[in-house]
Length: 68
Image (cartoon, rainbow, N blue to C red; front, side, top):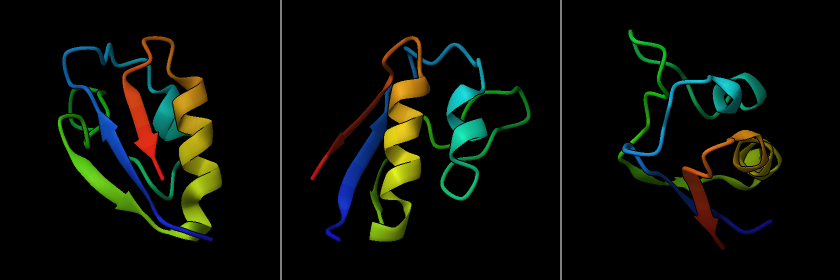
């Protein structure tokens, strides 16, 4: 599988926690309950693409984006 790039828009994140709940091997929460990777762009290894896609689908604010 190919890698993809994921980014999380900090201003859109409302801290629901759905993304790191469905992608525990990829995302984590910070001390305030927001996704710790907010405001970052990073590569996602092939074996975690399924979790990344689940995180994108779980975000009600559409704050998570990816590109292959």
